[in-house]
Image (cartoon, rainbow, N blue to C red; front, side, top):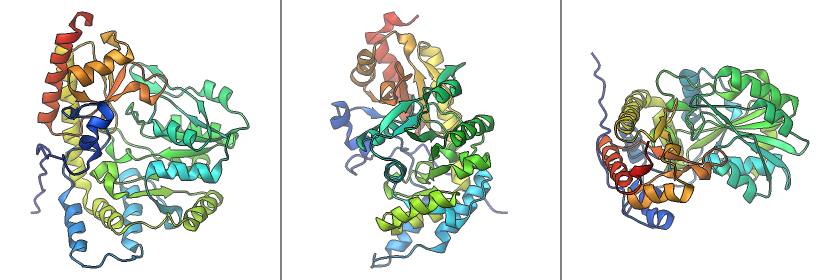
Length: 400
């Protein structure tokens, strides 16, 4: 009988001195280096051993020269998308890209011109705004509505918003920071609206593999022919298996015309060839990663439950919007009655915690903080105790 490997997510690994953004950039980003880092979206769990072993085996060879993309790389992606998400894709639909945010920037340069409008749905991952703005595009806002602790799309406002200058809509699926696994009906309705107005959808699905509590991710391009023919999907094993530093992203474009325009541009600028280590890590992750992922998600669910219970017991003014996907937890801190500066001061200077503040995600993010729970339980326990003490010493009077 085959035994199942038990992975340990309680190990605390010191990342200082490795140029890890999460820890070594704390002083530059937050003004202090002694904070518990619970911000940027990579996990503190060790990279799975089957990935590290595959990388180590390749590095035994002394030459790291020009390398063609192995067929196993494409096969692993195709198999994973079908088995994990029920999405059947063809190899010609696929291309490597050097990062999802990079992919958004590349798509902007192919499909839009300076002054064109890009629709985003705040509160949402801040590069959705920053990348278009930095490329001279105009942002059009279709804010999400918060109802019963869950975000919904405002289709009425979207229809009113769209004009001839709108070219792209960037979709976060699952949603970051709200943790929403969008329902099939929502995605179908979005596809219908975008098809009617000839909008191309850029679907960021980097958190797709991390659906929680029995939820199931639905790839945008899989919900209808309109969605498939009007979209570019970006994905990667990087969030799922904690290998963001390897730049292992890929694009999926079912529509032949969109694909020809986009992929010919990628090839012309030589950004469609994956690095040696990206292909090796991706193939190892998607071939051997199912059990590790199952155990990791169970651990993350346990971390979320711990935060929920702790806050309910000790800090009821802070409410958890339980995510349906990912290791990012959207904390509703509006009950503290603090303005933006005071809220950031509480977390950073009083509690000594580094989180992402809600305002960076745009309209609707005010009064929220994004907490990364992809960390050993002991780190999370220490963080919650520090938050309790910080509030006790500074703003306890505001808690009702």
